[in-house]
Length: 338
Image (cartoon, rainbow, N blue to C red; front, side):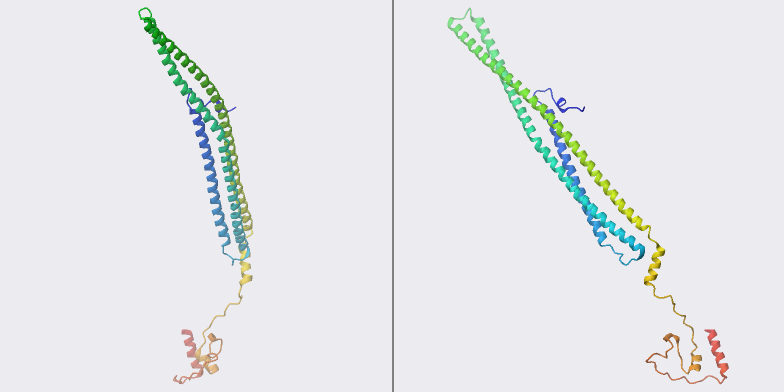
């Protein structure tokens, strides 16, 4: 069994409220702890919302739409799962706000529940203190009357044999008056002592109840925060499990990504032709001229200058007179040099 507040928060000084103040300080600290946790949840919710919105926007603005094949499937899965994670974190944001509201409601509930016990114990303390002050004052008056009574009796005793009758009568009256004042002060003092004891007993009973109430509320607060901290931890853990499962799904899709298959897909979809352009060879201008009477070139597809080509004047023949075979030999030599 744990320690009891009702056994440990007293003080031997009669008017001390040290135990009450310690318990009130603990109550205030507990309330601030609830407020701190409430603010923590709100800030964490804000962070979750920001993260979720960034992930959702990132996924929705993602490019890569021109990708093809199995890599495109992997990319699409990654983008979709990124948005999925963002939506899940948005759900967690709302759950955290719900938790914060529960903490606020609990905090306000405890504040209301301890208001009446606090008012009661404060009133009991004030009543005890008031009666204590009255007792202190009545005691002073009682002691003063005792001294006056003793003084008057002593004076009467010393002068009763030598004092004139009139003086002796005055001394007797003074003694009687002092005795009456003494008895009145004594009765008042005793009455205040009784009232003070009643106030003390009432305060003690209220203090025991107050301690029990504060202990119950403190136990309730600790249990509440422990349970909700556990809930928060589970929420974060489940979020991590969900995120890991999402990434595991993406990894499963990535296992089917095949570069060879994507290459074949690209070739099938985008291939232009298997025929390559033929090489361009040197065409002897003079040889073509002798064979065809005009030059031609494979560079323009075999056409002589295209649709708008004009016939060029032929150069005058200034070469030495040689046989046709010799001329071709010269051309071949030129070809060799080129």
